[in-house]
Length: 296
Image 1: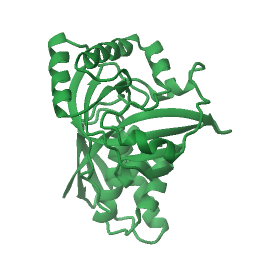
Image 2 (image 1 turned 90 degrees about the vertical axis):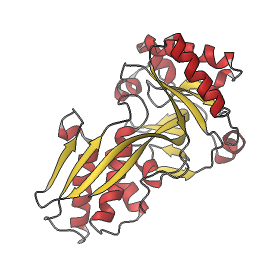
Image 3 (image 1 turned 180 degrees about the vertical axis):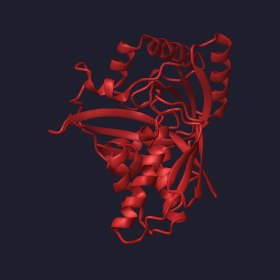
């Protein structure tokens, strides 16, 4: 049996720079893995691929299960696997769902990497990223496993060092459907594209304030409780001397985070928000420079 840990991510900024003819949105974002984790166990089986763990959703909607099925299919196509290959995939959720933290995509990437090793398929990171993109736009990032500038629909992943180390993450109880946000007519879809050079200086700031999240206004309009949490977090961030731009939403929401200068800032924010009774689950998180499931 193999036990792995799948990390969450934060979108330090997220710009929508266009839309393809097939309807997919073109994005630019700086992804940062953090130490909020799901636990995954993989156990070889002669009974095919089946699911354990504590995920309540249907198996056909389970990205980790679908990743295992898709990897076996790829192994068969390449002549590196047999139909007898099986596995019990168990995901024990720690990362909140519907929060823009990428838990499902991280689970899928972790299963791809783990089974690639467990089954001895010998696929490269590029192979797994290509397979992962079929499952979700964020999966390739988690395959490569380090902070990165991500472009296109998620397939262009350029590693980029990020100095930001400590974050206070607040997750309201309201899950946010990603598709609903991207379909909204009010979504900004024409932000000017950036280059890697544009980001170099911003990525070196311990408290990240560059850019914005283009999905945030739509999410806040549809779910006012998110805007309330963001405002409360901003007020407390300003009270401990952080900049206004340090607070924003991750992904399509609803997690709101503050990029802190150091651990002391993050702990002070956690204490203040707990005392205030903010309507969200709060957690201090750290940038993961070496994601725990990187098996390639």
